[in-house]
Length: 355
Ligand SMILES: [Zn+2]
Image 1 (cartoon, rainbow, N blue to C red):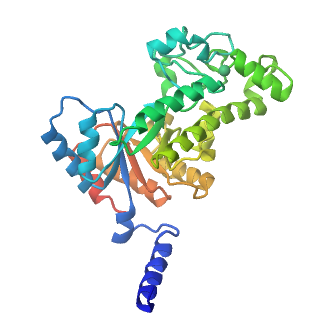
Image 2 (cartoon, helix red, strand yellow):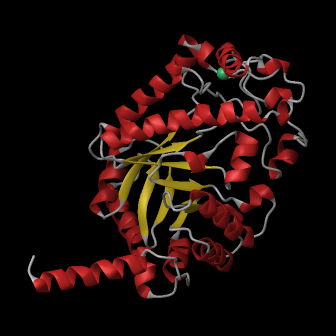
Image 3 (cartoon, rainbow, N blue to C red):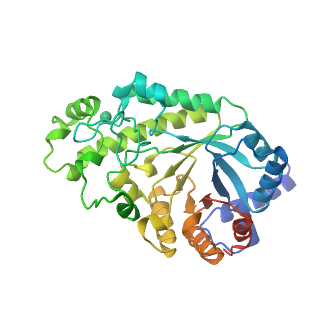
């Protein structure tokens, strides 16, 4: 490298390190670094022309990537042609496929009353949780992820439902399901299958069913966090072997995620995380979006970027949405991830939000 090149490189390197320091949003340069995402269930019937128009407008509004819930190739291809990353969004531990239910009912999680998700799902019929302590389940999920990442038009894998069944539902759902969950009720507390019971006994010397106050057992909580973390980190290795990225949709803050779904996401080896900071579910206001992002950022210690998941139906106006995005970005989020209908109004907010 000659001297001139060296100076040029040093200046650029210096600039980069300044920019990657604490975020003070406001300059155009900072705004360009912000990346937004969208969760989409792709419609087979949309024409290629419609998709091209739509994804071009997404890109212009600052949308960097899309999580597609189904494998509809034209959506992936056209998104990528428009400069948008196309990731496949999968349901991880909540797996209701008939074949699996029929061939391996023993892989399904069992509650503290001895009932299995295979035949007695909690809350809703689609809650068919696999037990994350089982090596066969880890292998099954690895195979699923490989099948997704084998496709050249898929840029990454996005894990949803990567947790235990909700032992406590978000408070806004209590009225809907007519259940008051001020304590951990046995029918929603998982998993006490044979594999979990023997695995925990081997570790600690006693059966989790013998714990006097199960909701207070720190060791049984850790055991469950670790089962999910081991699975995620195995899938992360698989994604890395493909040189593709892995991310997850998780509960809104590290504390809430551990407490109500045994999800210890700050200890996962991801490339990015999208906490579902759905304020309405928790009867919180827009400002809480900022609090939740701040908590996540503190626990992550810069390990990977956080994109604040926002639930569009909970915003009553464009101004509210703009505020929500602002709270997320000003507290350290690298962008937002939107769930719900992304119409022209939403795209305008993304373009004009001031941060
Ligand atoms: Zn189990």
